[in-house]
Image 1 (cartoon, one colour):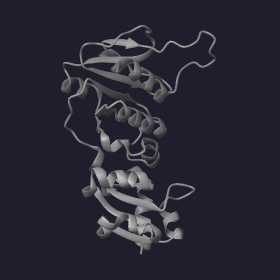
Image 2 (cartoon, helix red, strand yellow):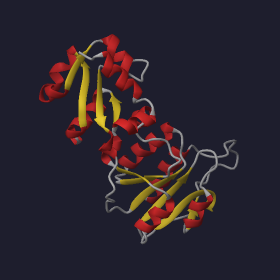
Image 3 (cartoon, one colour):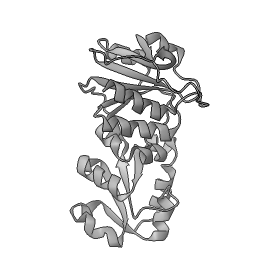
Image 4 (spheres, one colour):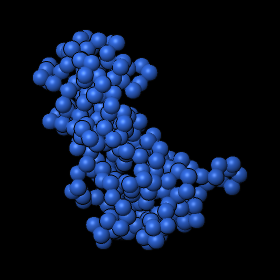
Length: 243
């Protein structure tokens, strides 16, 4: 059964400093747990589940810890807990090897975990393999990011580094910034690109703007009351135009 000691340990992983200290994070839900077991089973430390779910995990019995609805609620971050929760090695979504792909994403200070998770999921949809986050972005291992990404973080290399490090690693790439003063009419560049998306409140930082070779914007209605788009929505629209 799930011991009180393990319950306290898993509860501590809701905080970033303990996820980093123990190199672990939690995922919840049958779909995302099954995805983890399919893509990177070696990174799954434990699977906590209710007894009626046991037959679905016959091939991973050595990782299974049975529990009950009261205990599983204590380790869940959801109001309605899933019957399946897993503990993973935090190294699952951090690989320094950059893959060869025409489009990459750089997030500059995107702090809302829901936005970060949605952008990860959108990148997966378009087949993008590398996403880069500045140090001021939300922690990609936080429960809200993981929930929003819906398992798509397993498909990407997710790197955390500043813009200067990135330009050194990708000297042949065209850096394009999303900016309200950018060009509303643009076509797909014939070079590999890094699409830079800024924070929800202040957009791209001066350091990132000084790095960008050009800027694009999404043209909206002249009668719109909205001053800007949600950063995850804007990322999806720009990827559709650039893909």
